[in-house]
Length: 181
Image (cartoon, rainbow, N blue to C red; front, top):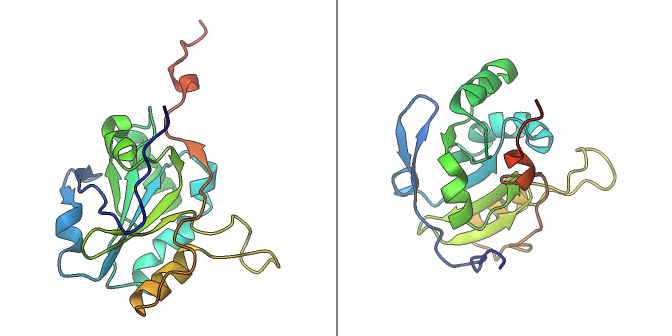
């Protein structure tokens, strides 16, 4: 049985997760009084996520009024591993720990990265990839999340509200295989 995917416009499930400093961050509190927020399911070991370090690091500079919460849900990725990744890659965006991937399952998310733009009412306005995984400046490069944010903030309908995402599996049978001795 596949995951039940939320409809665009339906409310996302609220959550409260600890960040890497041990502070509980509540989605509803983060978005309160704001027009929107962005949630990205992310992993420190996913090579696809690694490509978005600069984008996520500079998100608050581009969108100072939009909270960004990255949710680390990947199976077997520990808080200590995440802290080492933050230090080693100079990451500055907030990373929340989703032990066991409960929030990822609730949000029908199976891979990283996967982005969500939420309205101030927690309704899903955009869901999917950040871009088409081409490099900026190449002829085929196309952004998805940024135009969705621009459309939403301008009060326009989002041209592409649901784009397929791609990346690394959050849970896999391969993560559960016994180690060879």
